[in-house]
Image 1: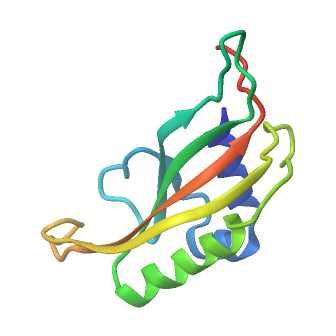
Image 2 (image 1 turned 180 degrees about the vertical axis):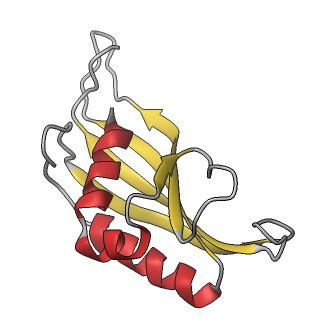
Length: 138
């Protein structure tokens, strides 16, 4: 799965792992998570086709959210994630190869009344285009 490949790239990054350790989860944060942390989810997949067959490569839009208790901390994490992913191509230990990962858009958000004491948490949401060979059917 492409998501596992992207997570492996993030975990292998000294800059990212120095901030979040292994706190990188699919879709949602666990209840009462330690922050900062990262979540990710597939938003869409475009698979070029002809009338004869799929021709690949596929392009996946992957949303990567950075979470932290302060704006400075979330921006530092978002910067580390962007420095790691934007322009990445290659493979990380046993994962599916990534032909190229490119930032499409990014936005700063605040989630009020969330967090352990209801103090709210900061979030940077970013969409990346991930270009990959055709995924094998599961």
